[in-house]
Length: 232
Image (cartoon, rainbow, N blue to C red; front, side, top):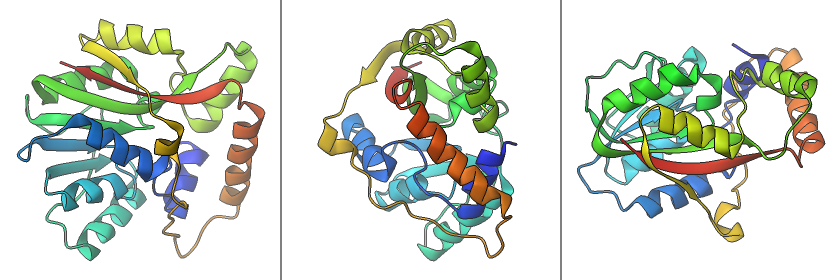
């Protein structure tokens, strides 16, 4: 597990994905979900998105690979009196039966996975005709291989794709109706980042946080994110 993911866990960063919870809300409003839809939040982190969905009345399952994230998510769910708990699991091996969900949400998660395995599992647990919606890192313009490798190593990315490459991966995995969702600028303004700090944080993770900020600034012209929607 990368130091970046460790940093997110120890700092308890909610809405670490670009656009934060405000973009999440916009994504969900766009979908016009039915009241009985069952939703899976993969890589749920501290549970901010899952809690929001739970308060809207949806049936929610939440998973993450990091035990500290699971602990913080479950503290949130208990504090907010929500009727579900997060469990530790990976997207490549989802602990759910076939055709279990109406919607799967991934927010800055798929780039950290072995993508073909993750997409196969997502396709398996989604009911026919149902949706994957994801907010993921994208390479806007080509980067020299050395710089791209440094970014992948720091974040722990298995892949860093351009938009055409994302679309090719999704289509190859059998997803249909692949759309990029565009949002007006006012829809993606973030609320202040919420954190639930651990009592003891390894000092090295403060350096990791600074390196993250530095990389984002250095590669502002190269890296971005996209929100895509597709069906099985």
